[in-house]
Length: 256
Image 1 (spheres, rainbow, N blue to C red):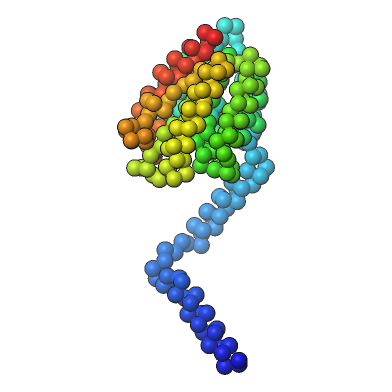
Image 2: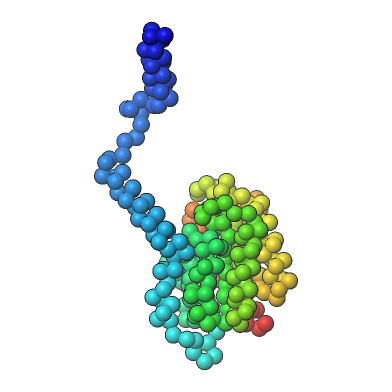
């Protein structure tokens, strides 16, 4: 037995060495770079733990937003990075319109539901345009079923209706893989299924369905590459396609 022990140790060592690449073939990050990346991750983790729905993001802006003027058709756009990024490029966010952007990058419907009252209801808009669900499918805040997403969209819509706010529900945007891998985390068939539910739910409840999907999808069911910068987010051309669709949906909602 004593003779076997050194042999077993030797075999275990060789096995472990065989599972790793030679040091010369592995990319080496500098200690400073590794420390910087770790610090950024820790900062994001602290922020998430301290304010999971990111209520702080628009707190001051909400507090400083005056009530709507008489006759003002105020609209709040609630969403994730697709909404958050609207107006940060050359495609402007509805210049001259009393429209308020309340998108937050990376967010899911449970996070939006928590901040719906301060970021939407408290601003007293006539219309809310909600675009959400793609990050839920990707599991950004943990696994979710389509039922979970639908429940959260229902709750936000019911809150809006109870407060006299007209509801526009947007379709989830298609994705693609040509400029970055996205279909694995956001399966196109799930996007289609969720959009079918959103359209049906909107029709049954007298809400407006805003169909971005049909204008942005190609013949293979993927996001048109000329309308996106990374196969997930619209580029300026994409936002220019979306803007008139949103305007028509808002106009329709105001007539209800």
